[in-house]
Length: 102
Length: 144
Image (cartoon, rainbow over all chains, first blue to last red; front, side, top):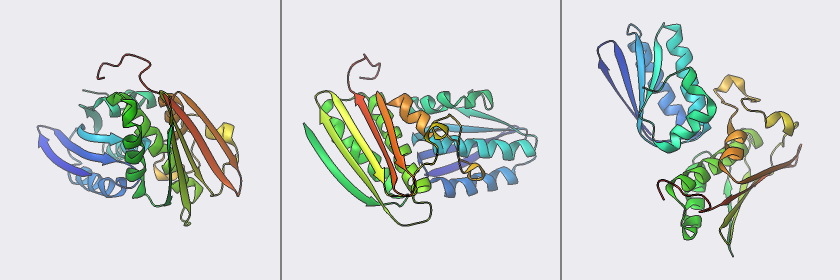
């Protein structure tokens, strides 16, 4: 599981790659929170999921956790380019109503 | 008919092994990519439940049985953990006993949605068994 970050305009981009499950989530959770805290002045965060080869419902919990953290800073959250398997889990959970897919 | 029996310690690092073992086992059924990922996701949910809820921080074994029968894959995942007090409640989407830990409560919903058949049996103090079936190749898949 890897997390890469970048900034474009007023957006923080977080690129997730690898397999997100109960085992890998704790490391990426603390990294994502650190990046969010460091970029708290920006207006939105975009999670790019193109490199995410596997995600189970642990990913839903992870994304909602980051959504809550971003909300405290007044930042909005978006998802981008999920693979079809991750997209199926995300759509089933209804999470796109909280964090729209770009 | 073919079958495998696996037994592994309830450690989260074994989740990736379990789902990939089932995926490898079902390859002779010629699953589409989407069928493969459905099964991997459902297996990951069941194994995670055994580790996180069944055993919590206790040590224990997770048992995984896979069978193929014609075009059908059967998966049985069980533990000897604490068991589920109220199965009806546990099956509700978004229900979780661990709300403080960023749990989505979607595990059983995913297993039910992604597999053709699903059942769960549990006894408090004895453990939980999840049985799932997936018929392979029944519907045309875009990525087949």
